[in-house]
Length: 187
View 1 (cartoon, rainbow, N blue to C red):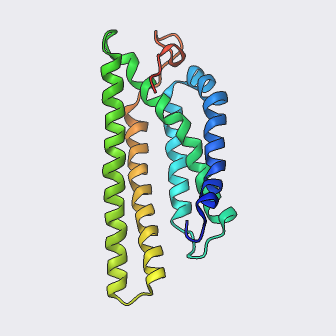
View 2: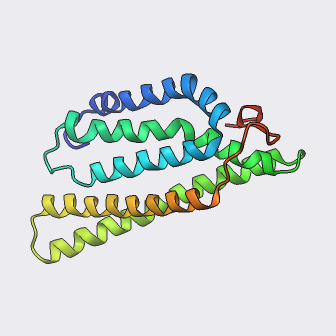
View 3: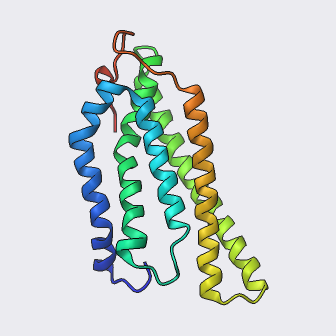
C-alpha cells in the first residue's frame, strides 16, 4: 500500500484479520456441519470474484474505505472457509488410514497453486504494464492498469473455478453417512 508506514499497512489489514477470526470461530463449524462444503466453496468463490473485480477498478489514488477495505472484507469472508472446506471435502472420500496423506497432498497443492498463480498473475500484470509503457502511457497509470488487468485475469480464473466446483462437487446430505461436522480437520 503506497505511502503507508509499516504500522499503517498492518492496521489496514486488521479488519480482514478480525473478520477471518470471527468467521473461523463462530460461523465455520456451524455452517460446515449444516450445509457441507459445496455451498461454502461456491459462496467463497463468489466473494473472491467480487473482491477481485472491485480491486480491478481501484483508481490510482485510492480511498482506503471505498476502494481497498471492501476488497479485504470480501476476501476475508472466503479465507476461513478455505482450509476447512478443503479438508472436509476430501476426507469423506479417502480410506480411513490415509487422511494424513490426503491432508498433506491437499495443503501442498494449495501452496503450490498459490505460488504459481501469484507468479503468473504478476507476469500478466507486468506484461500489460510493459505494453502500456511502450505506448508512452504515464508510469503510474501503466502500473495501475497492469494491476487492474491482473485482477481481472484472477477473477476470470476464479469464475472458472466456480463453474467447475458447481458442476463437479456433490452435495452431501445429512443422512448420507459422513457429515462435514464429523470430518476431522487438519490445519
